[in-house]
Image 1 (cartoon, rainbow, N blue to C red):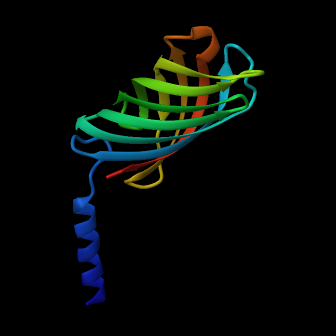
Image 2: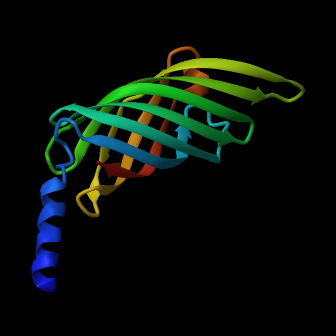
Image 3: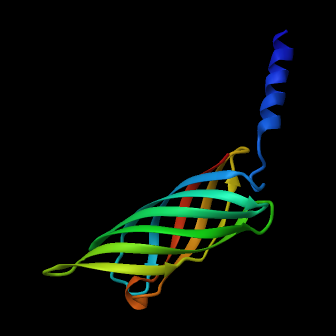
Length: 165
């Protein structure tokens, strides 16, 4: 009796599972950023966290919203953005294209000033699936500053955990 009950439970769970890239699937992710290569070479060490919420409106196409915080030696930055992600192959390779707004308190030698910045944010990454719902997602991104190109544009690496539901 236990065998049949267990088999019925597994069948019900497997029928209710969604494929990762199907239309109607939701997405939640948390990621760490911290290895940035800045054009101005002033910032050597950075630490950042991002939270992302997304929705697949079409097979292999996701729209998302993102919130983030970065701490650098001389400033703290808060960001919010949106974009779209396309999964090139059904194996997890993806391309992102988004835009984000960033507010920064930049500490100079004797004073502090505020910077408001707009970025274009292309990204390429890969999803390593641990099971049908959880993935590890390393990515390379480029934050192209549209306001202060030489001071705020950077290339970086990100590692995140994604949950597809």
